[in-house]
Image (tube, rainbow, N blue to C red; front, side):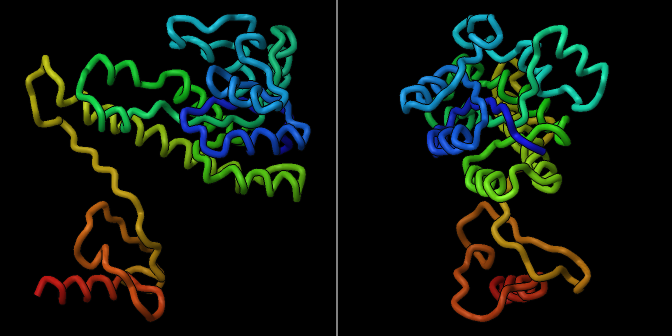
Length: 259
């Protein structure tokens, strides 16, 4: 899939200027919003503000800016579908091939406040909507939700002039995981807030990061990985020497540790 137009709207600005510059150098037309737009423009990179593109201003303190048919039509249109292409032509909708979004920092907000109103205001609406639209249309749209993927995207575009099906699918899966984790954090926190008075959530969702990919599972034909969010025990020990660990190695070491 070739990339001719990209939309960048990020809360986490890490690496976005360099990424935007690389995309522009590759001939990609850039759209952007709010602070991301200003940052890119101030660094001398050609970029069009979404409000200028849609002909509709941002409003309601930024709550409404990307919720527009020219944005979501560009993300959801199936390339090569005659009906979709006719609708795009009739309504002046251009295809958006690459979406770059990092969401409002809801979990960061949790660390500094327990005020329900502020928490609610930091729930991203446009971001998850765009991410899910692009990920649903993954055959035709690349969706990037982490600065860690910027370099790989640029390298692949430089080398091949396009993004592979494998890359698009991998990005889409990561995108759906990011919105799921985001909604999980919101769900878990809001369950604690009155007026329900129920301090125990109906469903407990636990998000645990992967720490280590293992050589194999209990048996050689099985895949396995170690997940941990704690700070002690075998799962968080430092390996000083030896080959990569397997599932059985960890189970045996954990048994020894507990003894």
